[in-house]
Image (cartoon, rainbow, N blue to C red; front, side, top):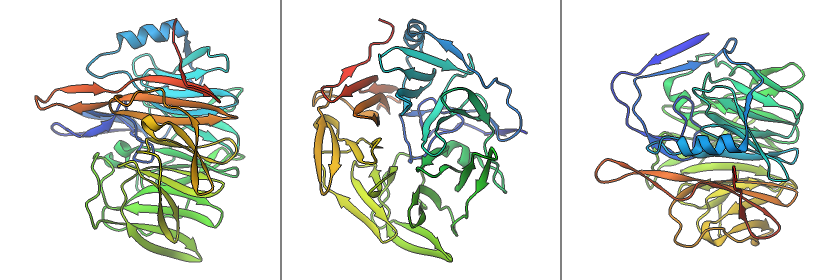
Length: 387
């Protein structure tokens, strides 16, 4: 089924870079871009118009495409995960796969709209998931072949806001969930289909800001603060934690403005818009002091909590303190950028993209550095593509 939404007039809002159809919410924010849309076309179910198997670009072809990318939009990376020792990085030119030796392959499913969302690691199956902006469908790679899956369709259908807020994948060793449209779906790998999870009793404009599959049950953090606008919650605004134990139980907490959440062996943690790091449980939230403003969180391959604190570097959470594991590749004068973090067996990837800001003259400027930085127990080095 193909659904076309006509958006009357001009929309001027902050949206993640390269995501004009489906934007990951604050659960996985990337660069923001002010856009003007007259219509948005979305695929919510049914067969895809694109093949499951992608075409490929060489490193030199990719580098040439980056150089030709429209300067007013700006090229950027959207997310990063390791899978089977390969680093997968989504961007607005496709899905970049970086092998252990640094060689790259870029996968594209559409030449005219190659943007890829995600990627998300599925530790249960195992596999890596991503989403194609060209038709909204999901793609999954198990290390041998690519498969595609339509987005699960909610009982009430998707709204324009649902699609703009976007989707995120969340995994444990036992499960993989897709979060979007104020709902969560469990992937039933043996049956090749999505199963809708219980929905907490949301009221008003509340939306799911974090879905945390914990040992004692799935934990939802919901908020009525808009996730489409890059704004901090106002003092006094509240969020609600929901967990199901025979019936829904709830707990009201301060709305922290959560942008990213991760589940590690120790529990659940979140990064806020102002760079704070918090532990989250049904009992509430607890602030963790850090060496600076946190720009990205990640789960390590051994179940630990990894965090990038900007110019202070990358740190591993050890008990009640942070241990430095890699110095920042940037100088203290580095301008604002969006960061994504991934780790596998001691290899750390720090992926950055410029932020896009509106100037006083209503023009846009790009701040910060775009790049893929790799560390294997030492200093970061930038991956040189096409050289």
